[in-house]
Length: 325
Ligand code: UT7
Image (spheres, rainbow, N blue to C red):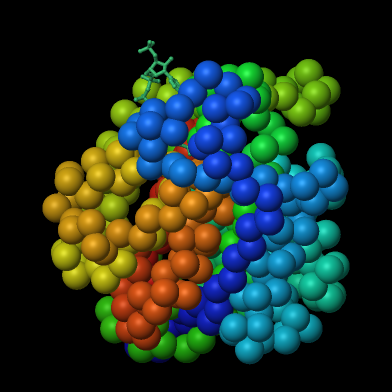
């Protein structure tokens, strides 16, 4: 039976030029390269310059994805930006990106699911494309977390960085089988009972300030391993694939120990997991498309490959998307 699937036609990414290494972090807070590398795997992060906005990073990533997809921006009718660090409280950063790309039709809006934002945004775009409402989408994850960090809190400021990644999706007719190209399965979840584990202590509707990120790292860690493994297992059951049939795992890049914990639970060899957090730390909604972009640039993504993207973040929110490249 013929069905419409959202096929990933292109991927792109952008990191700000300025790099802050772990050695640089020791001049800001009481920490060490050894602690950061051993507990997280992070070696450096990219930080946006003064005046370099989330939309600037998102536009650069989206442009690269469009060029690689061979798609003209005038043919895009949906722009979704996943971000927890919008340029302004409103309008959506997605409309700023839409304008800069020269997209003039369809709809543009932001998605706020923190580190799971890109997985949420892909899921939303996939549903719009499958329903026939839109034909081609740019889905972006873009963040300037450096602006919401408490740079005196060593437990959080060493973990995060700025960046953006993007994909171009196109609705294409497929056969309705497991061999189809495109997004095969999406699963998003949230549980607000855990909102105090990872949050920003400000906002326009409460303090009228931007606020700073606060996290109970140990508890978030515990949930991350359980919930990510759970949603991957659910995706495998739904689609009938075994863990070792997935060619590439493209996870949210928060902590190498979380990646190892999930891999151990599911019996996945480390070679199948894309790890980029050493280079840019946790970039929240940007981290999955940044990792996807690195896999593409390193020729680790071949047509027909099964790719599993997953994330967990503030909310708590979490989810997974399975796609055939
Ligand atoms: O993207 C959204 C999802 N986010 C995550 O998934 C993050 C999940 N959590 C984590 O990745 C880890 O919990 C952290 C990396 C945040 C922390 O690692 P941990 O092994 O859970 O450390 P901890 O919080 O239990 O702290 C251990 C010790 C503490 O000292 P004491 O109390 O044992 O003396 C901290 O004060 O490490 C200390 N510490 C540091 N020491 C040096 C905390 N941060 C630092 C630091 N440098 N930057």
